Image (cartoon, rainbow, N blue to C red; front, side):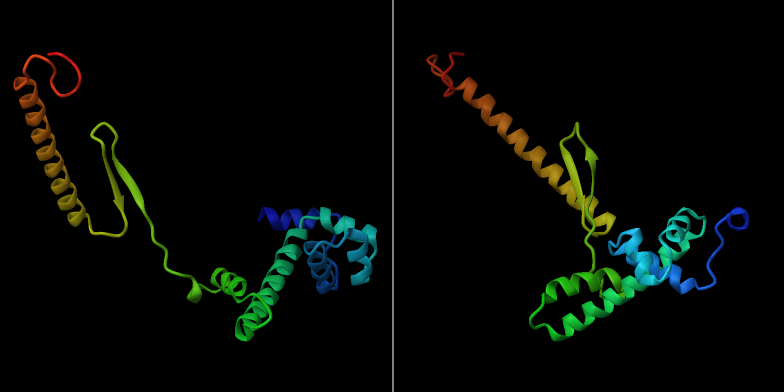
Length: 171
């Protein structure tokens, strides 16, 4: 509702030839100056300045962008089809972004865990129960190794001959 009121109160009315405004917007998108875009589309440069300040200009720009993207997708399809003399990898990348059917599957990784326990979980689409089993198995193995290492360390302290404990220090 506010947009319609803004357009009604806008001193710059939409042109009768909407395609002319879209053409100017297209030329501005691809880098033409106001003066060059106006001359190419057959409009005055002051008119184009007024159009760009109007409340409806974003609609013309949006339509021009849509037309430009359609043209770009068509060129990318042709390039991909030919595949010779141009960069088919670039064409494929453009198409992957333009056509939902060609978007590659994404792998999503989620990181979670507690920093104090030293456990970090990487979730790459595995079911939660499998992750829990994997995490508990890993924790059990780490605890087993830690207790084994502490037993070895305690044994080496007790079996010292008084000179050192194998670490260069005296007991």
